[in-house]
Length: 271
Image 1 (cartoon, rainbow, N blue to C red):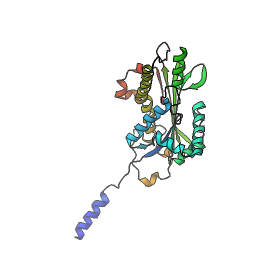
Image 2: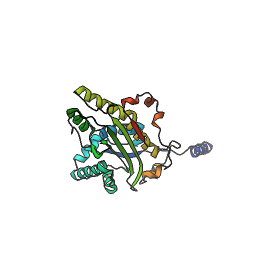
Image 3: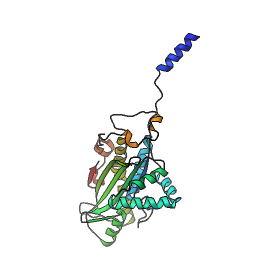
Image 4: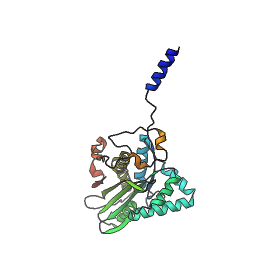
């Protein structure tokens, strides 16, 4: 009997210690999170569309967890001070890429997250610094028969709120309209087509690229960390990524290769 007990103990000691896969909580905040049905078409703003796809990518991986935009909106609406702080913080970021690190940390603490992903997206022109909603530009161009080269500029930045560090940032540009710079919708069906194209652009390019680049900052391709839960307690997110992590080449995705880039317009990738 003693011999069997010794064998059992020996086998137990030889077995590898139980490991736990690391997961991270990332709060995704699009600049237009509280702008719901605030345009002529009552369409969701571009930053919200991109953020939804990023969150879906995060949660489906089960490595990064992010609350839905609806749950974030509900929490903001229940706390007026938090809502005001968030609105002012996102307005600064959307207008001039100005990040209030202390405000971002205060917001993230409420959601028990140590990382925040800010996303902004707006229609811009080369002759003006004015940033407009893509649907505002579509409405104006359609009503007044305006032909002008507009771009959809999207910015994303991942922040480690523990240390106040920028872990990653990306910039994306997409030409709006056709080769003649016409970006118009003469009827509801044409407007709905523009929304569908934006959704395709998000799922195939921007939303996916942002999600995958953020994931690479936590889980570089060359390593897939499996760490004891105790080592992650109160640890800063930046402790688990390497600055020299490989960047993502979105063209390597088979699904993206199959897409017609003309469906999205001219795209300049910034990773």
